[in-house]
Image 1 (cartoon, rainbow, N blue to C red):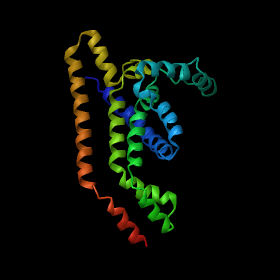
Image 2 (cartoon, rainbow, N blue to C red):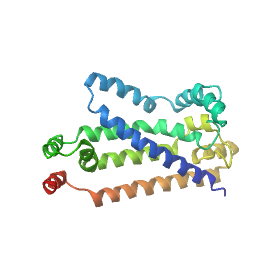
Image 3 (cartoon, helix red, strand yellow):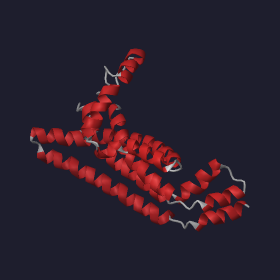
Image 4 (cartoon, helix red, strand yellow):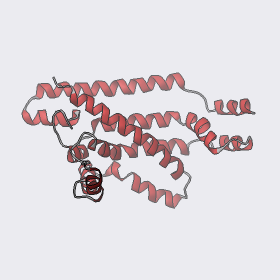
Length: 232
């Protein structure tokens, strides 16, 4: 049994989750503070990948990063390598598909944050950077962690856009989802079931680990106030 699809799926999902984690937090933090009309407009644009068919996302990606696209042709001409039909091509697709999950979840956590804690910190002369990383993030960690897990799970199971930009090349671009599809086409249901089971086990382990971490590190919002008193 060739284990490359498992290795490649985990590699792509982890890398794309890394990007969506920081991009989603950055976008959610600043967009949550924008005026309502502007927020609604930007929110609609950023969450489009959540409602569009993955194949449509893949089509737009191909037009952008393909050998004839503005980005893909420039990279090919300047650096000499393609952005499609390689293992890292899937990162572009999974990042775009999973970004809305991270963004919406993080934005919801930021919007539900008690802003009086920020005012208390500002009266103590604490910087915005300190307040963000030491007050906002710890108190919103459950929502942010949930967004990261959802993004990882979505990236791990992505198929449509990934197939269009990375294809299925055994030992090079194959991931679990494309491998299951290829095995189904070949009539090899026995091996396809094995990969489906592996995907289910990984998803179950990730979700169980997150639930355990949330229960272990869960703290009341009042902990931030104690932190301010300590700083004072």
